[in-house]
Length: 206
Image 1 (spheres, rainbow, N blue to C red):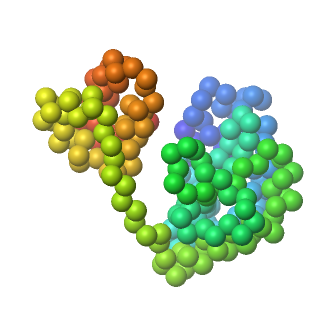
Image 2 (cartoon, one colour):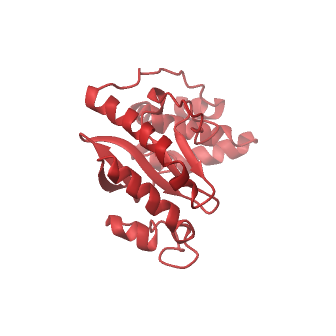
């Protein structure tokens, strides 16, 4: 994965075999990505690389991150629960997201056209950072799959490691297991995930 911010705009994120090729999604959406970069920098944000993508910060707090896919590119706000979205442009990142915090672009020129709204949203997020405002903590009881409960009942090490995971990492396993239709598939996945759980990692972490 990339470490230098310029590599993202010149070659891509480095997370797949399309890195530094003409087929890289960063190449497809280069004009739009550079427009988002300019808008974020003009807003006075500090640019860095996190998770192999351009991330924009203010007062050591993450404000927004640029993402790119084959079919679109995105500007996603951290602390989405705070965003008011007067323009109605924010979307949820996925079916398991609780708050809308992403602006999706399917036209390279779209970022330029939306610049006034994006500037306003960035200013709103910066204001929260300057005031030290964070979204209220939300507690959501996870409903663990029966197969996971049974596995932990018979494996104390697994149970201890799973309960020591962050809520987000626990949720990543629950989502992954619940996506399997067959109990046997869930059992197989738990066996495969055991070492990751013991290592303190989430389902999608390497």
